Length: 154
Image (cartoon, rainbow, N blue to C red; front, side, top):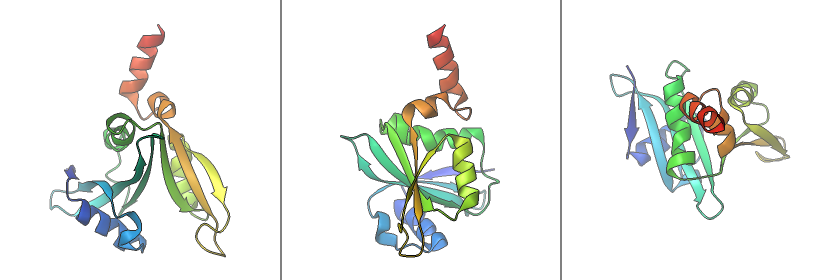
């Protein structure tokens, strides 16, 4: 059984930074959502940072030990936070251009991609993956919002 952890931003940030080999200060301010098992061991962690309320944008960073925690209800929670609680119109995720597995997962989720040359240094390009609020509302992973949209259209 999994459960969410809120309010322990330092532990979530540390889990992501350590697992991904990132400097902890890369996203110093923000809010985290952790996913733990019955023994309180992290399965995944996500951190929302660089929130710009005026523009309605936010960046999400994360990592997971496996995909066993992933379900429609968990994905709904992870994406409802930026779009409904923070009222963002765009969510961004930065990743290495060579990360084929993540690109496939994000593409299935409805993200678009912009390649940035040398984003990870002289020898490695990166991608900024973006999802817009209306794309999340229409997503096959957001059944509740999709049902509401269909009812509105009727």
